Image 1 (cartoon, rainbow, N blue to C red):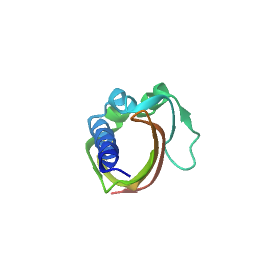
Image 2 (image 1 turned 90 degrees about the vertical axis):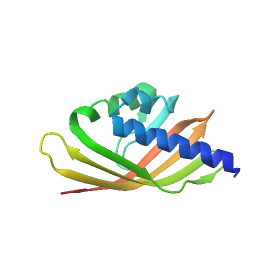
Image 3 (image 1 turned 180 degrees about the horizontal axis):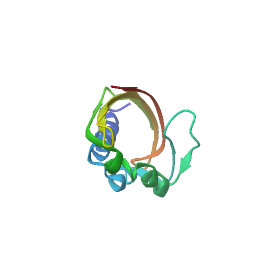
Image 4 (image 1 turned 135 degrees about the vertical axis):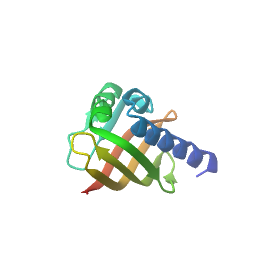
Length: 125
């Protein structure tokens, strides 16, 4: 795997994290292909298409504050990559802190994400 591909994948995840931190559903969805498949957790029904991705993330500004996203080293093989992540935030309604840790597994096409699977665990308090 060339280093420039790994750097591109890391930039995709950095942009994903920034979109989450800023609650910017449009910025998040722009990282995906038009026909992308997004699985927000292992048991979720797959969401298909850029519009569905934007719809999933649209309420973040109303539900989460003080969002901090960190990602680890990108592991890549051809058009696929995986990365661990940590995201902390505060629930707007209750003020409760939340710590989410997980992994993202992605396939890419044309420089964008064509499939993303999120596996995560959330701890409250």
